[in-house]
Image: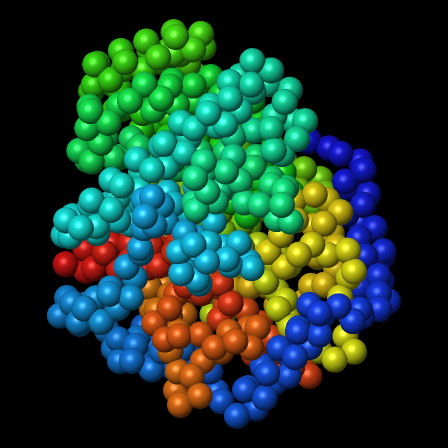
Length: 550
């Protein structure tokens, strides 16, 4: 078992020290704090006059919270092929994701292209872009425009990895693996400014924003997307430029150099580094897909081998297989232990079993060596995270937790907490943000759409008819819960987000946030609305559940 006495002890002292400080620290009079107090009053006034959602009984016998009144008929009634067609006609136009002039997809479309977003959610995240690619790829089966957008997106991402900065980072780590553990900016980067002519990092106060780029899941989904793009004919032989081939030739050596199967990374939530089952899973799945692609394409394999020779790095089918085997050893062991990063003492901040990122083991395509029973184990873990409006990322998640964007008059927040959407991957920043957590107010994310897809996948591969019916049932329940998050309003006042600002109808939020006004708890959409990853996930869920019901 991995053990760090310093982290374990500080984890225990957190309740005693940071919890006390969160109560005792004094409110400041900064402009940000004043704005948060003003936002609290806006939310308080709104909620005193306007019910933001309705709780309705769905045909499946489950109560579902719904923001958009136009979706109520589809949530109340049973889903069938005819009703599904009407639903898709109603909602799919709102799930379209725009690409920038350079072919990228912003994480969120809160502002127009080129404008500044104070949250920096207009940056390009590789991970989000990977999910968006898979959504466009699936929609591309019936929509040629979406197929072309998928091609533009993956080629743009590929060219980001082929920039001099990225290639130098990769080569430096291959030549000196210690660099990967000596700084979160030394590794390959996973987020950048899509408006930058050179695709440089996001800048804050004139400097590259410090960010924990140790996120192997992002590289994994990128490589999965390239493999799928090749397999589906989106990527042609003419697209294999020397720099793009160089990227493919270096990745196995990079993963081998850092020993990805035991590498502590920030994972999907970009927080404290630990050995994440979900990150290892995406690298393994990428290597599996590339093994299949190269087996059927000898010319492509030869081109990659020649590129590797020029770069003087190790590359072989044997290496790909070794990486897959090492990855599975970690995945199987940690899944048996309970989930995401269970191989730490329970007192350690890094210890975690239930984590929503475990959907990576099954989506967007499942690990080849994962049994049906192991997939059901993943679902059991994920559904423990279900809450009234969505799926929490993990227990005691402080990001966008209760009153994250607002501040009651006279209330205190820990003075050392990071900026609202800033980096919180260091132990100090993570603990300081955690000190502000109001118990049981974790943000409820859009991941019901993920669970709908997983249940659909299980149903397709299930021989037991009773279990199959159960999967179909839960696929519909989770899809309807996902639809419940789509914004809308029941009155002329419209809907507001958890920061007190207006939010338009038919938007898919990153999460549903808790706001505590006095002793009452309410739910409102996150200000990070619309989130393109959420739109992509809902679009994929609609397509997969519809296919299941045909």
